[in-house]
Length: 421
Image 1 (cartoon, helix red, strand yellow):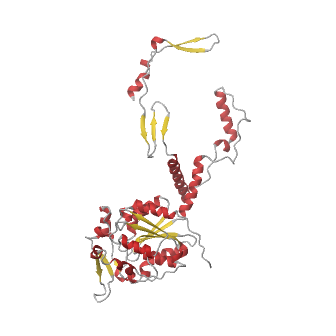
Image 2: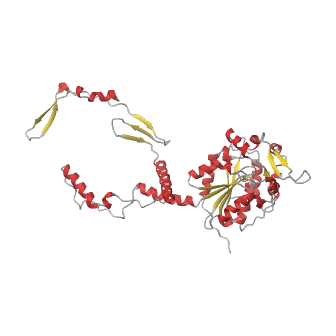
């Protein structure tokens, strides 16, 4: 840069300018041909790659001229809308939101016009007649960025009414949803991940949990305290499917949709153990990984199920990154046996009134795809989604794919309830 500016130093400025006047006394400038300084050609343009996948910009350093090629205007507009929505949500949360001011000319027209008059007189330019200037009114259309903010506020309003409640499977805890929780919150949703009794950070001995109501109590407590005029989207994984079914029967007015992710989706009169017994002989690996605990003695039914840590990667996390497998190995706890044997009582007026969706995991060795098909065929949901290349834990192995499905389901409009009273 220093070398390119050297040609403008006083030492090199040898060009002499002679002024003459023509017969109309208008000054003209003429340079001596022998002293004409040759201006080097401008540097080649630099190509700037923007963060947008479809936007290449050629920028000329010596000029402000920019040429855009195939700019994805829809993508840019969408990004601006999302940014505006998040900004507006931030102002609402902090109580700093206020109406945007119009232009300076509307706030102080006299002062503004006087400044414009001075600028015109300084440049010896006559101002335009006031009759030729269109008077702006409050009914003028808003600028584009204001319109984006208005659209963003509507989207934030929609997201504020969409609240995900994530329910883990047997042996897991709220910790297993950390990727899904992060993605949903970054997208503007409200999210709660529940620790069921004796799971995750909930300190209770799993061997002392004998009923489904006892196991599901943290979820029921959450829904009981939840706003009566709002609804949640329940997401259940593994035996968490039976847990959200139990909650749907109790609080149908507080649930807008239920999503079963490689989960037990049962019919009335079925237990989780009834359904999982179908896979006996189909998945010897899963059976070998399970260790039954008998806290009340060998002559009594099992009180909990534990997993062989040397086999959990092969059974539950065969597509999961190693660091997440390590997290699971130190975080998983015993699965209470009693709730698995309890048969559900589900009605068409409560449980049946809520739209259900199923997410299949194709490479699942804990609940094989064939068993998932059995549950889908016997208790058909509204729609079935499939995650290819996912193990039993898509929230760890395929978080982006799962997130996309959850968002898509949240945007499905609810069906009109035409039940007669």
